[in-house]
Image (tube, rainbow, N blue to C red; front, side, top):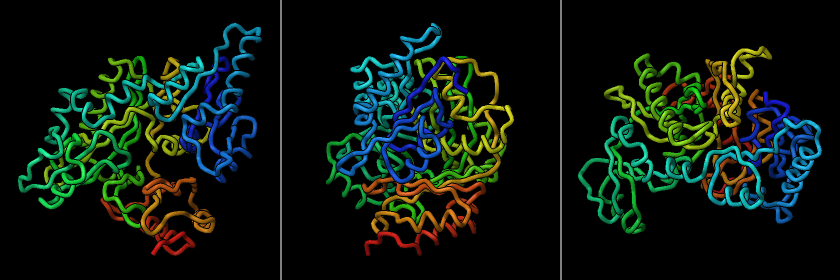
Length: 425
């Protein structure tokens, strides 16, 4: 997939983010040493490099980039290129899940080449406040009614609304204000904080991964966004998974046309500003009117990319028909021509168990029970509240309807609830 004269080193806190492509000689992965990453390392010992923290903690991406092992890997690759008789070979490229100022600083300090778009553009697009200005007319057309205000100046007007802080992750920065008491509590805690206010829209939400290439915008497969379901999270706005099969059932032809238009407009604006590669768009369909609204733009590789690409690869079954979303992402970043469409998928789902008040870690018997039931399992070494503990992936839908698990979804929830978890009662 990657030309022989190109080499990419994907440095990732969680190895799962980098597994949209099979590790190979010219696609190396550097990540933390965990039980799950060790399983991947055994399959690809020459292409997966794991770093262990002597303190037992997980390194962040910035720490992994600054580690001596990573520096030696990249130095050796650069030396190999310099000594090669093949003058077409390029120096290795660094790729990360999300480019930030800290990440970018380490890369620049080491004089490395990074594939990700600039961090300042990613920040402008993702920041909930600057995003309004960046979207401009697109936001006016597709966002729910919105405004930006200092928390203490917000006035209760007898209708529920959404407060979003400038930064949040998987719903952590989103609050639903149902009454005056909710607003008062927020204002007392964060009186000077700027917030984005939006009209509350009730209905199912969806997400789509898309790619900005030099010559076109490529839209991936739309998934229903699984949000806020217990026992998987305590946060009603936390995104905990994707269901590609349910999205097919819920969205009308008119909905699909609107979503395609929104993605195209956002993609073209990103391209004009110099963006290349993956971005994500979150949307919601209002229950009463069936109208599609834009919720969010994520200027980075969305977390669902890896599994979408895995499902696409299974559809191809080894045939050279179409590209996976991750393959198109890499080709766009490398400036390579893209002459194939993305592979369409009809089914599949994944759901994440996050750290909650009652489930603060996952033991081996949970993963074992889920694997025996036919699911793929990715485990994480996280401890912070609402962080990923375990990702469960299914070839089929796990949702029956909006906010309703089907038999497979209920089976997953039951295994988690009855297995030997670290329960805090």
